[in-house]
Amino acid sequence: MKTVLFPHKLPIGRRQFIRWSAASLALTAAPRLFPYLPSAFDSIATWDMSRFTMLTDGFKKRPWNEVFAMMVEAGFPQVEIRAMAPQFSMNPSPEIVTSVLELATRAGCRITGLNAYLGPRGGEDPTDVSAQIAAGQRNIDAAARFGARLCRVLPRRERTKQSYWDLLPFLRGLLPYAGARRVSLVVETRSGVDLDVTTMSEFCRAVDSPWFGLVFNPVQFADGGKDYKEAWAGLRGHVVHLHLRDYRRAAGGELDWAELGEGEMDLAWMIRELRNTKYSGLIGLEFDKAEPTVAAMKQWHQCCQRLLAATA
Image (cartoon, rainbow, N blue to C red; front, side, top):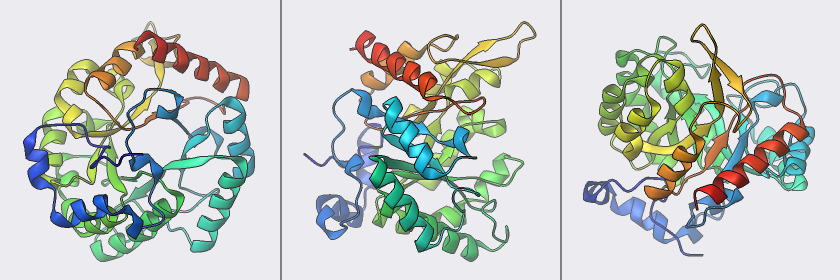
């Protein structure tokens, strides 16, 4: 399969090519140097069910062997795992990484993302950047062993513009390590300043790395009173991953959870936009209610198949 340079980045013009360092190009051209590189970084040119990965957040009370078995039974052998206790750790030991990887492999599951929370909220001293970087390296090593594409980063809890700018020393210290292992560091658009297109665009430009980008979550924009279609137009050049679910708006204006394909989210528009912009990343599906059943996930699988057919 042909290798594509940084396929997780959307094409945003020649300036992206200029920013690629010689070291990054060498890593991409010579994947044999790193035997644990994820197959997801080969060309993802087709639009089929391999585009979808399921988040495990709704299964936080189950052991991994049950989680992986349920995912495979439902037709979602790719998963994005929640990297927190009791199933995992924000500072994972090699032993826990080996154990989870063996369970996933045995079940026929592939781990595509590690939803760790790197940075000042990762359990380290929020003022000690070197400790945060060391903890981040442990998570990146885990992601690389899993063959995962990404690790999440979080600012301080208040999520202000300044809290993001305070992340810059941490990111600049950690991104070379992540890039050498072909793992992207990502921030999800969830609330507060995350939903400000101008601020997040400025932040991505300030970070200025092909190994950093955004997880676009359209429903969070709708929940924050924003137009997710306008937000996509402003942010798509920085998007490396997508989280997708559905919603319906209650009489009082607040958003309620809805089964995929049964709510107000314009899912077909979103998939069509991804196709049109040559998006080559994955789409993470997330449940936002009690633990889903295998039957419910099978319905989501059928919805995804219909979406792919409708947007072909």
